Amino acid sequence: MVLADNLDTIAAIATPIGEGGISVIRISGPSAFATADACFRGRVKLAEAASHTAHFGYIADATGQRLDEVVATVFKSPHSYTGEDVVEVSCHGGAYVTQAILSTFLSLGARLAEPGEFTKRAFLNGKMDLSQAEAVADLIHARSGLSLRSSLSQLQGRLSEQINAVREKLIGTIGLLELELDFAEDGYEFVEKQKAMSDLDEIIGRINKLLDTYKSGKIHRDGVKVVLAGAPNVGKSSLLNQLLNENRAIVTDIPGTTRDVIEENLTINGILFRVIDTAGLRKTADVVEQEGVARTRAKVEESDLVLLVLDASRPAEAPDIEPLSQVAKVIKEGMKACVVAVNKVDLNPTINGKLLQSMSFLKGLPIVRVSALTGHGIDELKQTMVSSTLGGGKQAPESSVLVTNLRHFQAIKRAKEALLLAKESLGRGESSEFVAVDLRSALDSLGEITGVVTTEEILNSIFSKFCIGK
Image (cartoon, rainbow, N blue to C red; front, side):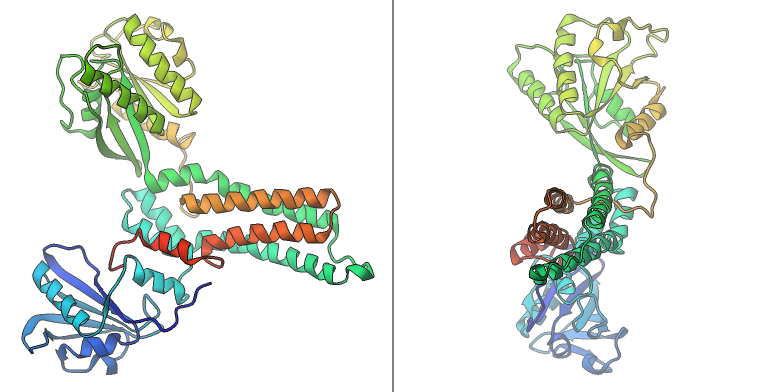
């Protein structure tokens, strides 16, 4: 693990740029108090103040001119976010005055912080592990209740606990195997092969449970990408407007009105759905509309859930069926969730099965009858979207551990592959040396998640995605 040694003092604006009630400028590092005291005018010196105390005063620039009245909050090492001496200065939320105060700190020797550098220092100083640091960024960008809860769970270290428990089990087994190698010439056996095989099965079982959570974990973190697909004029745009409860998409009686994709966010039961309205699927000579149809197919390939919209008021026509069957093929090949929304039931409330019978490729898919005009069936459609997404409609309990991050998923997957190799070697009766090598590979892969094993390249990749000031 990389340690934070001899780091300089950094400063940055910790609140969004723009006008607001207050702005916060954060300073962290060995000279944080000296830098702040050089321009802070109050009743006490911040370096002499007790930790976790706030002090009223004002900031003066290099010429002594007062910039703004502020409240400076003191956090002394190691009891701060970064583990270093930290000062957070709250000033009035104007862009100019905030920048002026930051510039004053920089002129006194502080360096402008890089993206995510405060959180990176918190990791390097042992205030949190790497998965918890990543959860900070996820928490900031959370756009739904589920995303918020999963980020908090990871920030509290629940995933780390699971990973560390597996690593401890592995370390114990590796230790015995390597001890056995030291006494190989004497014929001592410290690891009973059947017991080792049983332990590996248990560890692989734990890892499989974590891997199985990634699909729903990804939904918690990123939301569900939903594509509205169907022939022209079946009411896709009207359905989007009804789902959003606002007139977002242009609706006309002219087929082919929608020629580009429109994306809006919708939250159902705490899940973020990113709903995309697309061009109608049909054969056309119009070059612009052809491009819209091509984009629709591309969006279907990228989607998590497809809402296939049909028109209950008219029989299916051959020019419509062929493009829909092609999309259905993409859905099945990609193993994507799909819900059929039979729209305009207000025009044909006694719809029979002929419409669906003409499209055998829809067999087995959930079907909801709706009216984008009256709102009939919209609540049922929303719940079907949730159940199709979660596979049964049950959300994971708040106490459950979910893998939400692709980097974590890939690391756990690599660990499983190494464990399977170790199990094969053990089954073939190979030397403990070969088994230990694969177990160490699994141990290192799991260590990448929490940062026990890491590189500067991994750290830079993770923290570069943070905003400056965090």
